[in-house]
Image (cartoon, rainbow, N blue to C red; front, top):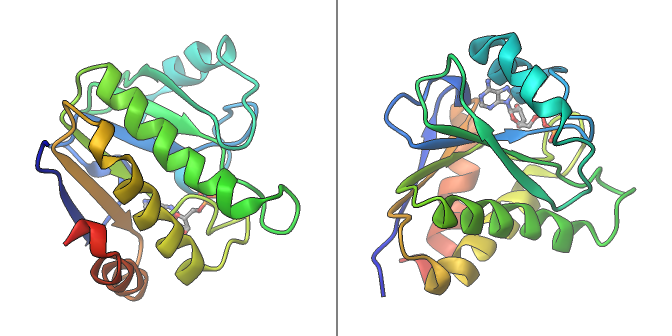
Length: 175
Ligand code: ADP
């Protein structure tokens, strides 16, 4: 089985120069919006929104892939996380985001993928619960990956990074 490194850093998802693909915490229409989507579309330029028009709408748990336009990466994968308390079961839908993004990256022969904390901003998912779901989803998908070697979680604050780091340590399949 391939060895996959999982790491948690503090940073901006739109500034991950060394990663093959970054993941967008998208909205259903794949429009620029705020938070992660705003940062990614802002850095990618208007060509990204134009390309995304043909890919939208997407449903919670789904992942679609586009070019990266002016971003330094090869691709962007757009995931629609669940709105907490609205899209149910939210834990399964959130896990599907991570799983579907990893499998999509792998199918495109990409080696490194950076995730933000999907659903934990405007969509209201509690950070600690989201971190546990994310780590378990990565752990559960590892055996199916052939190309992906590095999974990076990019958190906006050091506090958030610590929460993800702790979830990583608790997920026995990843140590
Ligand atoms: P969602 O709508 O899926 O909840 P958001 O973009 O509102 O997505 O937020 C998801 C998480 O990403 C939040 O924890 C937020 O603090 C964080 N975040 C916002 N902007 C960035 C960024 N540029 N890079 C990394 N994380 C970010």
